[in-house]
Image 1: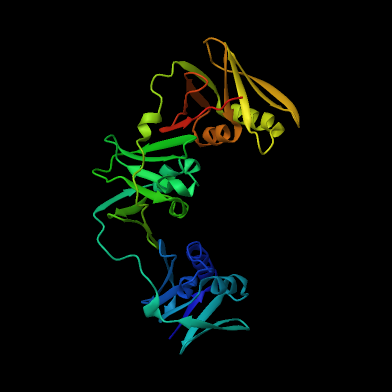
Image 2: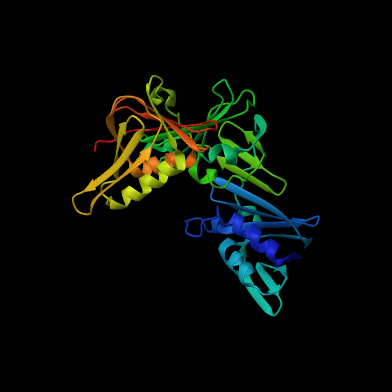
Length: 349
């Protein structure tokens, strides 16, 4: 059993699949990729038991084996020849290209675990990468609240919506209606693997599948209940400020250079027509910057974590950001020109 394949195609495919495989684990075969070639196509599969990544690429010949993913990927990336031949002899895989030759151990194909079985009840097409992009920054990394370690994908009645929150910041984005969709939580690692553009999406009770012409990703869903995020979205914030989104973000970044790792607060002082950003640090000094804004309310102050503020401003679209505020202790609503809404909790300064 042997195949011939373009080196660049093999290297690219293995690099993609290796995003899932784990070289350090207690189950040796999880460090391997499954290679199956027939009908002029090589299928490469990797898994960590939570996600299965399948990629297809053109080749010549037939092959069926498993081999160390990272080692084969490193070899393919460093080879100098244009083509690579993979030949299986017993339990050894020989890799040849130009004057280079490698022999790698293999493990039985029958031992390789698969996640792609089962029935997927809901199917639709969507650009999930675009839907998730302005939301992913708000995914929690706190493992104790595991149900926040992903993006909540659901249909609130008016279309497809993706939501993420870590308790300090929240963001959601909307897309067109796709029909009846059960609410599911897509894990953080899976979110980073979703192909760009419109893809086929399938959902079952405990798994989600993303498919393109040459890639299929199957992932387990987070088994938990996402909290009622609508309760923290302010609805009656009556203090409204509009500003140049990029100018505000850059100003926050500049004044926050004074901040230390322990303190990241930035104070926003609002007055009619102006916004003053200020940071004061007993150890490293102070900084202020003033911006022209559209605001006509009473003068007042509010503080934010500067990193959170920059992240929120970064995911909004358009030249102008609208901030709807209530009081220094209540969440602030941020919107741009696209169908993306973000909420950020203030902090004492």
